[in-house]
Image (cartoon, rainbow, N blue to C red):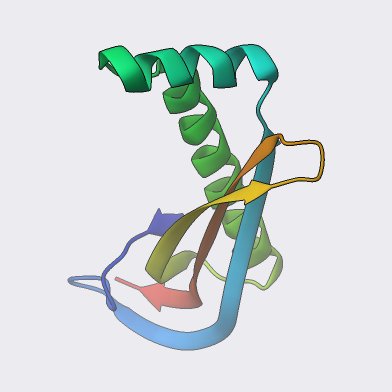
Length: 109
């Protein structure tokens, strides 16, 4: 399945639009990751743990979006947008949210 941020597929003709499809992923972080990320904020450097979490969440959201498109009978998703958010929860923790959305389409070469 083609997944692209562009509004069209070069060299292909879109024959039908199936509608908007979305995928979401919310991952919890833990106190140890938060603690070490805070230390990295002070001394500088990248947080490998958060980067892994973001990659995992992005992959999950895109895969869910693709499954929704496939269920709708599409063979591509165009105009894909990926958004990232952090959500604070009552106990002081943080959740990472990634959402992917786009337009499910059917195309021919």
